[in-house]
Image (tube, rainbow, N blue to C red; front, side, top):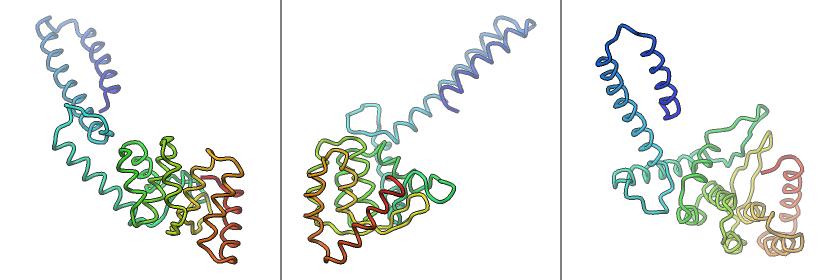
Length: 221
């Protein structure tokens, strides 16, 4: 039960007591004390669960060592599941526009992973992890996103990318550029693409560019 639902239940409980005139004042007070104690336990448990998933960039004396360990275990589990799923999914996948569990894992990373964790993940061996980590950083407007982009201009790690009914192979260097492109002008994008193109053969780059253009015209990240 969430705190909001608990408070709503308290209001209903007060109405219930007021409708029972035969209960003595002492009994009503006892009921209230027991009930409020029960509600405080529920709210406390809910707050601890939220703390477990919270970003712990800032020191918080209320977070215990055990909670930090459990959070780290959950973080590691999310990363392993992203690798195992073997696809980078967007918000809507398939004809029905389904939000997949993989996308929910990305949302967790974006909301609760620390900056350091996300930066470290951009250097992971797995393309799914790299893609989601940088996507999360740019969505957060991380100040050094450009530095990470430039570090990965020669990174041709590939991964499967799904958006709507479209599924294609993408490369980290171009994906990072697409994530950061809203901070660049047309000339800057062109210069980055020129540097990235050196990692492909002429025919290979021509094919990759056509696929990127088709993807951009069909669905957006």
